[in-house]
Image (cartoon, rainbow, N blue to C red; front, top):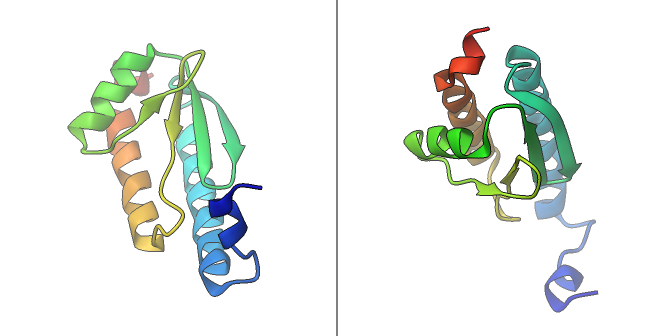
Length: 112
């Protein structure tokens, strides 16, 4: 186990709060997948590390996210990675999902 991972106690209040925020954010991302089925093929990942398998080219989605001031990273086969810090707040996660939704709405494939 890494030194950093060993410092995160799953019984801690921070972990519990982040888990609740993470579950809410994942539910919101699932609703984005339902709203934009021509853009998001699959939601992957574990915990706060989430990947979105995309139908449009990765660059288009990354550019749309950048326009909404949401930093994302390409990861593998047409997947955009969302990786917030471990101490992210529920409000910050909610804002990120909102920005992601606005970014997806910018894409031509979203209009289908």
